[in-house]
Image 1 (tube, rainbow, N blue to C red):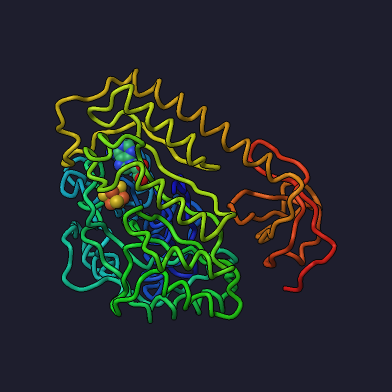
Image 2: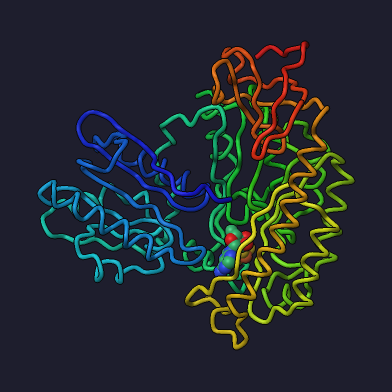
Length: 454
Ligand code: 5AD
Ligand code: SF4
């Protein structure tokens, strides 16, 4: 799920740290952990990069032009660094750092540290090395030790809705994807550490936790558990009202996980389950290891377990070799399954991945046309889903004030933004809300009379 570009702010007394984050929720989580690991060195959040002692760019390489965006941001930061007499430490982290490594230092020699996603726990030592005048540090190896064992407990509270990385990396090697190369092999954190972190998040005020992983339902802990068992254990944590997990692979939706959707009211009835394409030929070329009908069958099982379940998905149009007929199969799958929310992308060749070298690339204009057609269908489905919510009463977790005076806002079980007129004291609680109207990107409602206590 795209978090977009976000300026995380992390500040205190002695030194100032500014982190710029691109890409997925996992990068947002990682940025928080980098701030946590630097806090004992005296680094605290700075809202802006100007005058900061250290700036970290946490980058994403999943699709087009990622490296160009990083270099253009670096050009801007170079001038700020010069304004500090060269004192500002500039670090490039994340997947572009992992993929481009030395290229970054060659093109932007004013960068001090280049570090891949598996080395964040070593940041304090890298900062110490870089602080010695003129030293450059590159750490893009996959270290033998597990970074999670070496990171301090997450320190900064995340708020009412929190994210928790339980799994990282991927062994699936889809033809188009850089993740197995940038994030490395699939690695699971132990159930014990994950549950302990969840308890801390709840003690700090979290009411909803989203478990994160590139292949989150491949999580197996170090105890040989499955994700279903972990969700059951997490549902026992007092005060935790909502659970989600993302991103899943259809092949890893095992029966116990599906049963957890039936058994756990705290597990939200909304699942991001990327399918990428509805054509068996393209799914095979993508190395997805399932057919379109196998995906339909998983969805059927999930809906049998949890009839109010709604799905979101990721789609790629214009994968090498995709014909008009293949694309039509994707459209048909969307019509069959229906997705109230979805992300769709034009295929973008990633250097070093198998699909990038495939002989039959789809012309750009054709990719554009297919993307527009797919997005029009997905928009229709999203609007129909929102309209179908009017008149329903659904629990809304309020997370803040709304845009207008006297309004509070939160999320439905389906992650739809919902706003109501209501008192600020309801923020942090889940309340039954009757939906009265749809707006382009949100729903309006009224809090039902039988308000629940926090
Ligand atoms: N081109 C286009 N989309 C891609 N994704 C991953 N790699 C590529 C690529 N090379 C999309 C997939 C994935 C989502 C996170 O990004 O749909 O599920
Ligand atoms: Fe990439 Fe496929 Fe792994 Fe998802 S499952 S991270 S798309 S390789």
